[in-house]
Image (cartoon, rainbow, N blue to C red):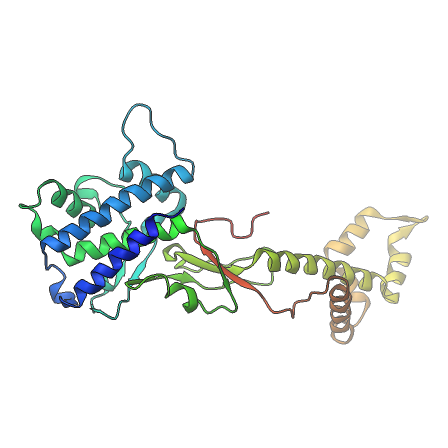
Length: 318
């Protein structure tokens, strides 16, 4: 049962309503009020709760000699597992009019596992407002609230751990529908035809979701590749010139010469036995046809994609 998402969405609605009354832009980012302080506290309390629940979900243990802290214990473990400090949240609500990059692209969990002056700005503001609201009311402002909300948004996404089936590689259908305030960075498909290959671009760690082949499609692709290679080898070694070369040069007294045969295979010397330009393409197509007939799948089968949470995982595990 997910008790956190409805609370987060309710906080979103309140902020949207507030932005209908107060203009959210770069010049007003430090505007503060009792209402903003209240929202900051409520949001941060949710962060504490969901961080602790995620901590136990991924194997965290209740310490026997001290209290369990949501930041230095829980978010610290989440950071080590998932590198959340790098994950970016984009401020995209049409009710907001920010132009400065630092107000539009957030890394809200950066330093959220630290304490004191080393900690995240929204977390320091939360502690200050919670413990001495009158003296620190100015810290209950738009800037700190939106950064705390972005942190809560990220933690909620990881708590939900939802997989999205994609009809194509367009990520807009799911990423833009998650929040009325924010969007996330998505690592779109960057793969190759090499078995179990997924190419991570330079912004991979900043992405909250990644788009990949479905496990089922990846499995069929690998099965087809193996079957195709098997068929191709059979076709090559059944070529009359290859068979003739083996019989005349690699067999002695009815036995294969191991050293010579190994060299013949590893150096692909069999390519010298036929016209590569005229014959090899037909061999590949014939092998593809045979593998496709056997498996009802080929390289031409439309790829199937899904979006999963970026947990720094081995994307196609053995």
